[in-house]
Image (cartoon, rainbow, N blue to C red; front, side, top):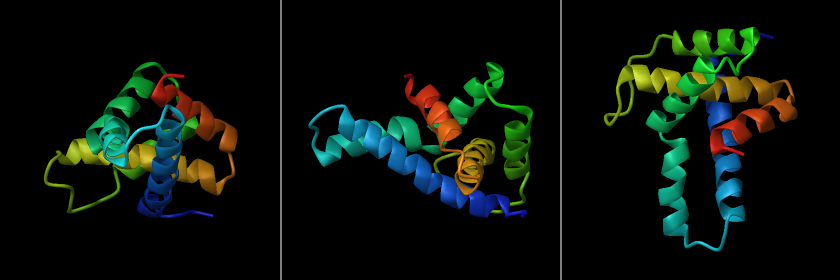
Length: 121
């Protein structure tokens, strides 16, 4: 089954966001405003792009995972958030698509490994 890269990113965004929220809530009793500010360090396009760069540099991703990221990054899009470049946005989309792909394929262990890598645990 071939699923559109942006649909995978859509799913991956939700999975990623839930993981980060759960992680931050488990770190202590914070006000929601503080949790939202802390989440930006993980969920912004810039942060996701940086995490992806780090994973690529450290050869953390498999060849198949790299292909999924590349396919999503290369997907034609005409829009992106005003506060980030198209390159940063496409890298973030690639990471989200990878998470979505792993979720569709029920590879929870690999999602966990990637998310632990991202949060540094």
